[in-house]
Length: 423
Ligand code: HAM
Image (cartoon, rainbow, N blue to C red; front, top):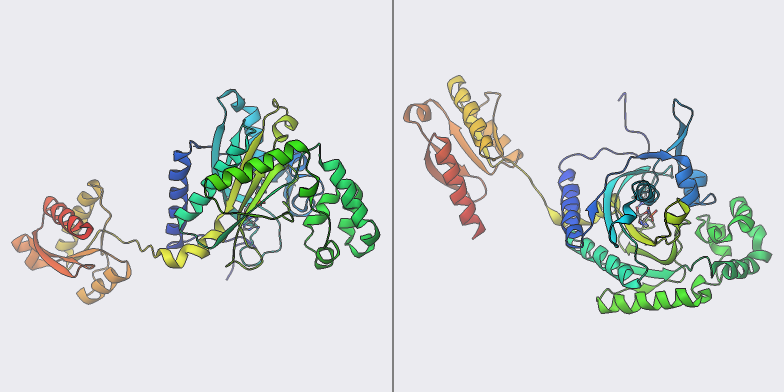
């Protein structure tokens, strides 16, 4: 084969696309009930935007970004995630002037140069939501509850909601010192990246995927023990309100996010059925990012779910088979001309109608009707043309109805059988 997709990228083909559409439309409906509005963002930004927000020492920025120079010599990056782009847009368009909370959602491809494996791609799709302008942990509880409702409505089960607090600018310095103290004598057991991060940003050591580093950092102090009063009160509020909304969750003090912008609340939703790449969705609060991007100090919180991790979990149980409402099987040229006109008329009435084009035997036309999952079939031959009558065969109910060769009769019969099926 001459050309193939690049490593870590994939084509999304029918019938899988129906599962994608199911998720997107379910998410859209739920977002609407919570007042989230869609926002569409470019897939490329100035590289700086990601370095400043995700963090210079994060794996994403250090190793995974698709960064290149455009023809004007600017450094641009294919977005590795949506939040930084979103905050850039939020500040650029002064969206903070609208009443808080301002709520937005987006979907689309993200790009990370990771080592591809099951459920981990270099181009992957996220659906993300961001809510801005409110510090109250009730909003944190609301957005986590919305995520739960969304995942449940899509058809996911067996999920674990893990939450933690990763503090703020006030409590981090103390924690950083405690962590450095813990790591100090073990530093030679860590990879060279971690050794470099020790002085620059020791908290990133907690996110390193190298097995030796994972082993060596066992027993490190959890940040949750170092929260300042404000973060403590906020975290208590989150837990209380999640319980009020009946969102079952576990507190995971070892939860570490791969992005530097988070403050206070951080969360992850995992599935037992995904192996090592178990996070189907994740997010958290980012109360300093708007400020750092040049906007007025504005708190924010959001999440993103990974489409490629959700699709395999629901694909089997969904069983979406899509086929035309009606498939016309003409025999002979005259019948084919009649079928061409009839299908066009049916479409103008909003129905998915198809005709067979290749003049094959009735047997092979019926085989094709089954293959394309046609719900109804009408055979048109010389006899049918002459009498202006035919038989509509319902392939699902296995019933046959005599009809005139006329679009209004077709529609009436289809509507009647739909009513019967839905009763
Ligand atoms: P993230 O944890 O980096 O957060 O990604 C969110 C989700 O995207 C993950 O839980 C996972 O399902 C999916 N994902 C990430 N990388 C890959 C990959 N290589 N292949 C397949 N799926 C992947 C963020 O991106 C934040 N922007 C979320 C957020 C929004 N925080 C606040 N607002």
